[in-house]
Length: 223
Image 1: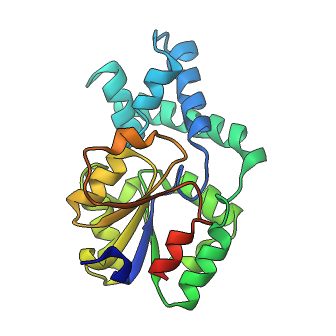
Image 2: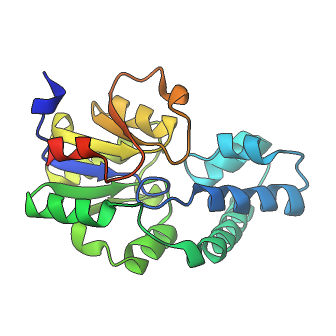
């Protein structure tokens, strides 16, 4: 298929780094907790590499499985999200051009959903803080899946909630593991260059475009 002829029936959006450009603030919050609170000797760059999946999964990758009790994991995750929101609140904004893109998609009757590894607390912070709930027929959060990205479950659940086949979806992502999740779900992907270098996505063949923001002319092809 010529990609210019592809007309999607649904857009599935990751949240962090895709709808808003906030990954720096998540990384800062985690880095502070890991180094100042937990005494880990880990660089900001190395924390950034682990910034995907659920909070518990992030802690397991850095500290090992079983290092913290379930209660302690919940405490650390809650503290991290509080710090993140405090850091990011003054900068809360959509990525450039997304407000108009949402409107065009809605006018063209393209269904939209969020498929994110974020917890509902953070999704609500963004969706309600920016008055976006009107655009989404479904939201899949970390609490809705057994295994987070790069597992396909997040995006498959979002597509199922919209009653749209995987092959008719375009996923918007900013992270390699998110692109891998879309690939595992059998979905095409557009990558936002907000968080990672293009070279980090070289192994994925489901990417149909790289964009800096939602003003990119190629997006008109899919509306």
